[in-house]
Figure (cartoon, rainbow, N blue to C red):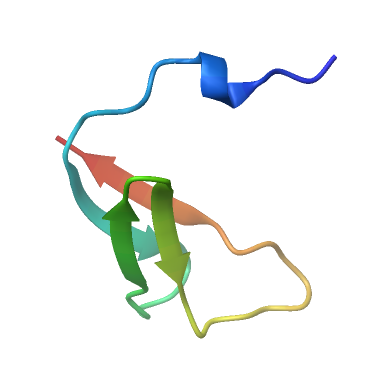
Length: 56
């Protein structure tokens, strides 16, 4: 059964930083009304790209 995310509370905290784990490459990110948008030039065909989002 899929959950409809539009029926859940929206996050209203402060995002302090976003990191790409396992790299020293900082991603570009911005928070907009429709969500958090993260862009990175880092790719790795063997493993998924994992982000750490630090909040306040």
